[in-house]
Length: 245
Length: 226
Image (cartoon, rainbow over all chains, first blue to last red; front, side, top):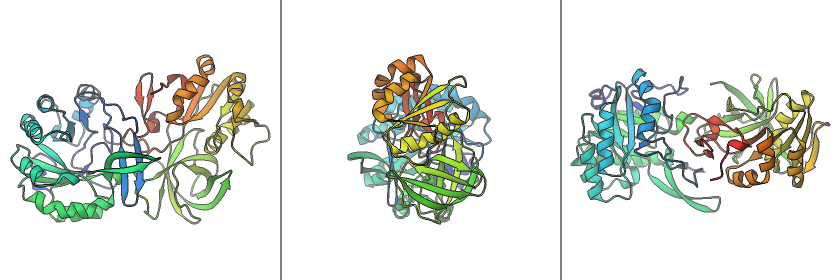
């Protein structure tokens, strides 16, 4: 059992990657895992529609998923789900997509008021400057502890330094981006699958040196791999593709 | 969620489209238009495949797969489903027009055609596919007569992809505004309705919807061009 997640009232290190189970947990899961918290789809301030060239591309070692992270926006999500999240047996862990510091502050304040929402993770806008990211992290600090996502392809000295000096409680190593040909057109998207696992392992040392809680949010394709990571001292493991089998 | 194990026992070429037959440990009872997610027992694929039934019996199912895969005889598979909302052709329709221009499209309409014929309706299928083993009383017309078929019918069903919405709304606008006209989306549904991941989403007059969960059959009049 994870000490860091326990502090947040999360009793098991097993979690789902946001977006892989929708807005509410399924009535029954085929994957035999005792989940520590439920993560709904990622939520932006404003509603987001699926992107025009949305697709799934399979490749040896994984899949590329390009959707645009569709969601009804924070207000509508709360209207649709907050009462049901409050009644769940599991704590809820939100995933937020602020575009700037103002949105991060507003979203954090809203989350503070949500019953049974224990924590949240922030995905920083990919094209933002280091300064903007820093201000988002500062603005997100509220009553509830939060995590910041570091995509696997952006683990570097700059990112780690910024996160280390932020008020984030922990980090989530999240899916990297990639680019593949699909029906004759190049498409960007998030990468999932077992090809990422060795890269995840190789980044553990850098992440643990931050002195924050470490959650692995990509590349875990089996319970065995998740158990190996827990054995290596990570605080939480988010599962993705196995949930769709 | 119902899961049924099976084994691939036959792979045939049906007009250029792979038609697969699997024995199943118990009967699968899909409604016309519903789909299955099929996982391979060997674990060689990360995600299950979306498949549409063509016909089924007490211990077998014939199906087409939306994605290409190296299927082989003896392969152990697991069917999850049936999933999604199937067709709901009105009971009082006496003449039903089906439009499935491609091989996949026509094959995916065969369960509906059989069901309609069994209930005594006249059924015509407009298609460019090369089909065999069809019910004798199913009238086959060339794909170029799709519009005529839709005009002749009291109710119609069309197989469509996301890229064909605008074209179909334009071509069949007389039909779908005056009679029941349903559209079946043939595409891959990675999450099989588990997550609403958005890959299969289509735009409707009431906002976007996930085909895997809200479909794969929609009223054509509900859809909006992107």
